[in-house]
Length: 76
Image (cartoon, rainbow, N blue to C red; front, side, top):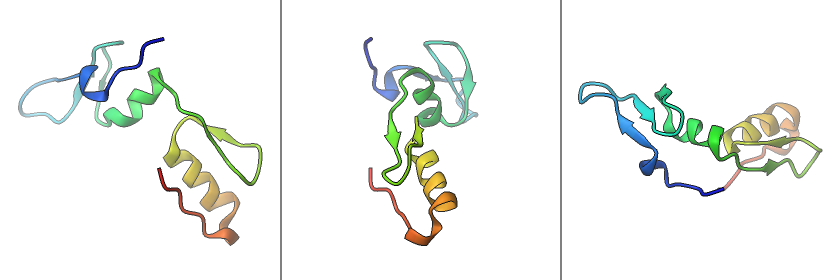
């Protein structure tokens, strides 16, 4: 499967709107980075348990809620 840069698969809906249209599926989205991972999921595994996520921000939220005693930060 070929991967694309984010700028290659999104186009502006119009000049007055921040939303963009995905050229792969046609969906109009506000957050292109999050939608990019719908088509090209990453694999972010928690080093403290068996949890695996497709986005780094979701892993960070998991670490903060499930392992608060460690005060975890994620560096991409």
